[in-house]
View 1 (spheres, rainbow, N blue to C red):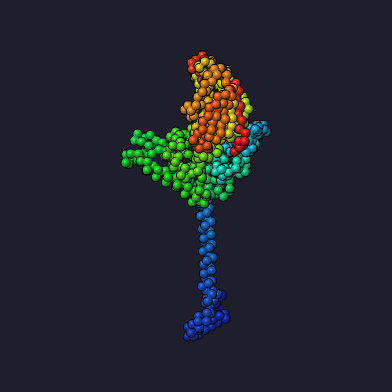
View 2: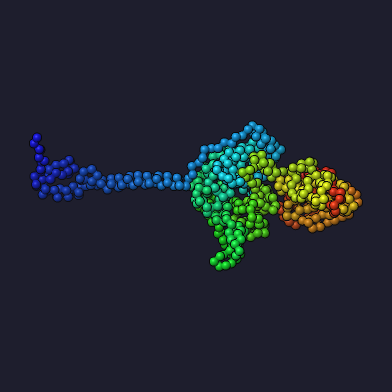
Length: 554
C-alpha cells in the first residue's frame, strides 16, 4: 500500500486564526495582521486576548481552592486522628428494680430545695486498677442513683450563682472531676449525655495534649465545651507533682511549699514563691480562656486529701491568700472544718467535696450526700438519730450520753458528739433545749454546745451547782445553780448573740464582735467524769427548733 505523503504548505504561507477560524496567511503579512489582532484584543484561540488573564486567574483560583480544601481536609483528618480519641460505645449498668427502689427511698425526707452538695469523681475507664477510677458501668449506676433519689446536676455558672447569694436551687449536686483525663471524653461524656447531666473538670492545663492517651487534648476539651455538658476550671498549670523542698531531698506540694533551688543551694524566698505560684495560676486561667472558654471561677487544690497539702485550706496560709486573688471558690477533699456548700462556705470561699471512688457503692454515695445536705434547725428528739451524730467519740459509743456508761477501764473520761456537723453549717436563729441529769457532787459535768465549727463556738457547761458559758473555750460568764442532779438548759442562738437559761432562773449571755456569717453552726453534746468509776451525766432529752420569726433555711 502506497504511503500517503503529508501535505506541506508553501514556504511563504502560514495557517493562522484571526478570529474567524483557521485560514492561510502569507508569512509576510503575518506580523502585521497579528499586531492588528492584538491591538483589537482579538485572541489567538479560546482563552487568549482580553479574556486570557481573567480566565487563567479563575482557573488558577479553582485549582488552588481544590488544593487548599484537599490539604485542609487532610490536615484536619490527621489532627483528628492524633488529638481526638474515638469514643467508646455507651455503657449500661445492670440495675435491678430493688436497686432503684432503695435509691429512691434514700432521697425521701430530704428538703426539695437546699444548697447543692459537691461530688468529686477522679476518672472513668474500662481497664484501670486504680482505687480512684470508676468503670463506665459503675459511673452509669452512680448517675442512675442520683436520678432515682431526685437529684439534678448544676453547671459551674449555676453553682457560682448560688454561692454569690443567688436563690437556693432544687435538690442538686455539682459533679466535679480533677486532672482532666482522657477517659472523661472516651467513656464519661456519653454516659453524662444519656442522663442529661452536667460535669465540671478542673484541668492541669500544662498536661493537656501531652502524655497521650492519659490526658485530654484541647480539641477534645473544645468539643466537650461546645456540647454544653461540661465546664472547665483550674487545677494549676504545672503544680500537680511533688517537688524537692530542702537540701535533704524531702518533697512537698509546690502550691504550699517554697521549693529547693538546687543550683543555688537554697530554698525560694517568699517573693520568689509568690511569683512562681501566681505565674502558674494565672497561666492556667490564660490556657483555658485562650481556647475560647470562660475564665474559671473555681480552683481544685491538688493533693487535697494527701500529704504535703493539708494547710492549703488554712485561712492563714499564703497559698489560700494567693488562691483568693484569682478564684472566688476553692474546692478541697480535706478540710479541718467541714464546710460543704453553704452560705457559710461562700463567705469563706472554701468548699469541701464528697469523694466518690471505685469502692463507693451508689447507696453509700447517696448516704454521704444526705449527710451533707443542709437541713433546717427543726429536729425533735435528735438523740434517737444515732446515725446522725458525728465528731470525735474516742473509744466510746453514743450510749455513754444516754446513761449506759462504758465498763472498760481503758475508756477515756471525756466524750463528745456533733449533730449532723456537715448539715448544720448555716444554722442560726434557733433554740436548743436539753434536760441533763445524774450530775454528781462536782465529780462529773455535761455541756451543750452551739455554733459548732464556727469561728466562735459557744458552750454551756453544767455541774451539779454551777453553769459556765465559754466562747471558743474561754470563760465569758458563770453563775451558781441550786445544787441538784438534774438541770434544764435552753440556749438561744441569734445572729451574733448567745443566751442560755438554766432552770428558768439563771441567765448567761454573750454578744460576739465577729461577722455574723462566721458564727453559724449546729449542736454539740459533751460528757465527762473526773475519775474512773464516777457516774456519767445523762442527756434525758434534747430538742432543736427555729426561733419565732426566723427565716427558713437557705
